[in-house]
Length: 312
Image (cartoon, rainbow, N blue to C red):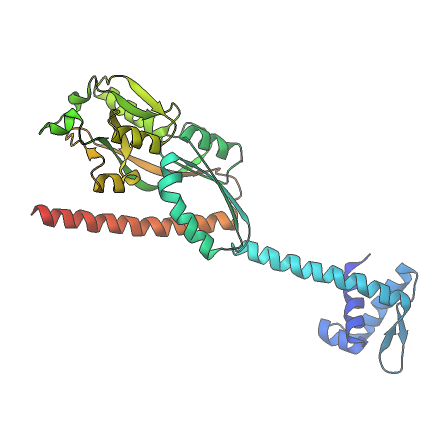
């Protein structure tokens, strides 16, 4: 069935006039009449009775108008849905995030995104850097957010925030009583760490190894919250992202160990497939994340300035 002929038929059926159809579609009346005759000939039925003034639908014409009306309503709905998708008003955002980012950074951004885009669907997997990277490579996640080195080939990586890993312990730990601490003081000390495959663990182990520091027994945990609880209850020293423990530090449940010759900073990164299609909903999320991080960086600079004034 010729859809152009069907569109002409539908307008004539709705307006009841060939002249009105010609005016609406910017086609001459003779051309409209000619194409209607061709359409009727192709279908093998008469669709209109020609009246002195206008036209009237036949039984076949009434039947076809019902189908044509539904068809063009679906077409308009599809066009509107595609437009909303292009404007990130609809769509399904599936992302993967490593533990620190997925637990302490993205939930707030996702909440803001949900308010601004209420008709979108959001799914987030939280795992370690290795799992997230492989998920992006396997096309299970549109975007990935990692806090460690990328070991999967053919992925695009871009830094979106800096983070600091700091050594902490319970207030009763023996090292909290020393006035001067060096990295060497960590030798032989029990450490609380994430599982193998964690970007945080890889970074800590690399840093300690470069300084020839051999810690004591390592106790492994599958998430940061478990490490925090173990450290609070005196289980050992933990290297934790500062962003993960503002409440515990403020309440004195954990104490930072001021090791002056050991600073661990890292980049938090977003990864994606370099040649893959990035849906509008994913691009809208990245824009919101960028705006949120710009505000975060400004807040950190203000806090650093305030600390400098206090020391002065």
